[in-house]
Amino acid sequence: MDRAQKAQTVEELGRIFSDSGVVVVAHYAGITVAEMSDFRAQMREAGGQVRVAKNRLAKIALEGKPCESMADLLKGQTVLAFSEDPVAAAKVVEAYAKKNGKLVVLGGAMGGQKLTAEGVKAVASMPSREELIASVVACIGAPAANLASAIGAPAANIAGILSTLEEREAA
Image (cartoon, rainbow, N blue to C red):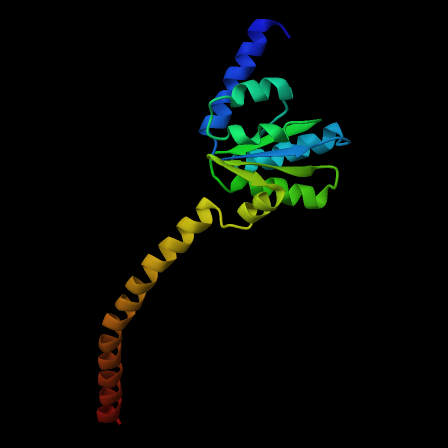
C-alpha cells in the first residue's frame, strides 16, 4: 500500500468514525471467508457496513474524532462494524457473535461515548430506529382509532335499535 492509498484509507476511516451512529470493534481471528461474507451480508441488510483496516491507520484516523477514546481497542485482528442507526450495527454484531464464537466483541463507540463489550450488548438490546418509529405511530394512532369507534358507536346503536323497532312493527 503506497502513501496515497494510506492517506485515502485514513480519510475514509475518518468519515466512518465521525458520521456513524455506532462503531463496534471485534476480533475476527479464525473466521472463514464464507463466514465473513455472511456477516457482511447481514450487516448490509441492517443498513450497516463492515470494514477491516490496519489498526495503525485506524488510530491515525481516530485522532481528533469524538470517539478517539476507543483507540486502545485496536489491537490484533480487528474488524469495524458501523451504521448510521445507533443500534443496527450493535444488534447484528451481537447476534452474529452469539452464533459464531470466533467473533469476539471488544467494545466500540457511540458518538463520543466509549463502549465496553457490555455496553455494546446494552446498545444491542435497545429498540432500533424503525421499532421506535412504529411504536410512536401506534401510540399516536390508537387514540384516534378509539375516538373514531366511540363516535361511530352511537350511530351503530341507533341503527340497531331502529332495525329492532322495524322488526317488531312488522311482526
